[in-house]
Every structure is written in C-alpha cells, then in structure tokens.
Length: 149
Ligand SMILES: [Fe+2]
Ligand SMILES: [Fe+2]
Image 1 (cartoon, rainbow, N blue to C red):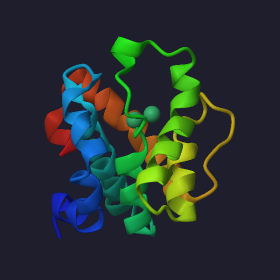
Image 2 (cartoon, rainbow, N blue to C red):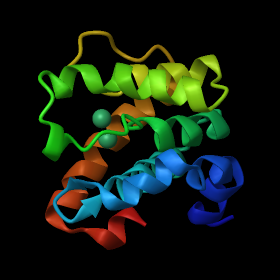
Image 3 (cartoon, rainbow, N blue to C red):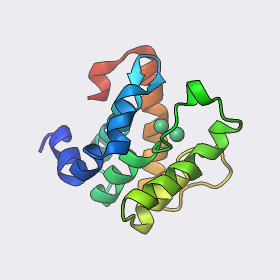
C-alpha cells in the first residue's frame, strides 16, 4: 500500500474536519501550511517504520501525527508566549474535544515536543512521531518535497 493511501485509510475523518482544513490557510514552516506539515509528519513516521522495520500501531501513530499540531491558532498573528512549550497541550485539548483519542494518540500529541518539553513520549509511536516531526521540519525548511511525500 502506498503511504498516502495508508494515511487516508486511518485518518480520513481527521483530514476532512474543519479544524484540519483551516490548517491549509496557516503557514507553518517556510512555505508549508500546517495541513501539509501534519501530512508530512504522518508520511515520515510511516517511512521510518518501513525503512527500519519498526513494528508500530500504525493507525494510532498516523492519527497522532495528523493531530500533533492541532492547536488551531495562527501563531504568526497571535504571537503566544511559550508557544514552543505549550502548543502540544493546546493541540491535545483541541483534539480531545473534536475526536475520540486512544491513549497512544494522546501520548503522541502531548509529548511530540520533547526535548523542548521535559517529558519524553512513553510509547514507541510517540518516539517515532517525535523524531519524524524534526525530520519533516528540516525537510520543509530546506524545500525537500520529494523526501516528504
Ligand atoms: Fe509541534
Ligand atoms: Fe510539528
């Protein structure tokens, strides 16, 4: 199965939700919108699992990756204090309000900013997404589209 298909199977409801669709209008890194960044993190997570043969609960991992930055405000317009440290908790609260989250999905979202926030993820899926978020961010800043999709 191709990676975009696998993401759709697990996360179609998330991708078509109003909160996620709003992310198409929000710049995230460089020229990448938040919607695209969320897809990139899910894709890199799945790719890491394939390359390194890591067994993971892929549905939870993909859904957590899609929701990891579900903080819904425009950080350029609002300039929140402590955005880097606080947005994972905001994303978790918003995601919990809009979707039914599994414990693994909660871990993925809440701890994806490690080591900027002190608590590391507890689940394997949380660790994978935490790493994939950094890789996707570098790829976006450098414009490496082929690597991300
Ligand atoms: Fe984040
Ligand atoms: Fe992110």
